[in-house]
Length: 250
Image 1 (cartoon, one colour):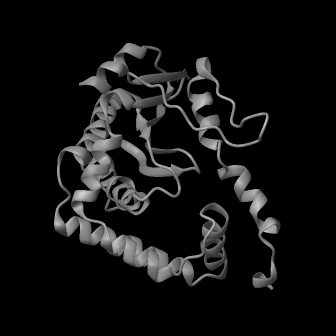
Image 2 (image 1 turned 180 degrees about the vertical axis):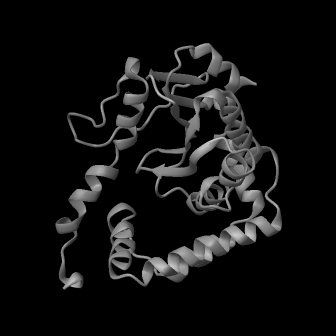
């Protein structure tokens, strides 16, 4: 049944979410003073994403609450980037699961967050790597500073061999478990057919994850984690933008 399905029958729902130009829409939302058309009106072709960020940015949504929810993010990479597997490993080390750096440092060791994780969202022409956390409003400064430090550490230090091995085993084990479920197997195939316009065997992804080196991760981190590329959003009882700009710059 699945083999006889035509591509257009399954492509539309996914492509609407992850089509060329989706990253441009995200940029327009993040920077409303510079809205960008997602496509050429005359041809329908997606326009290239232009990133015009020269300084760190902060956006606050002031709410009277006992808990604050924050996101700290940087520009990521597109879906078909050659560095996509290095990004998978980098993201897992930073914030993927209970052995990740964000979880062990922010939540377990310092007790700053009710929850914290890292995630990379990729589109056909752009991407974003971010950390999200729910924190006590009384300890917001320390939480922000600690998360920023973990981002910078990814760029400033080489990942130790034992941590890299543990992370690769985690990613490969998660993929194998995903493929044991029929829905997971279907989504694995559809994602590559629809978004990458190609089919891939699971062994190809396992080998690609295994091939990632600590040098690959640090090179990628240095490329995307830059001081003038930090973006910070916060929902909570705060209205002082400069306070958080200072924390990002510290």
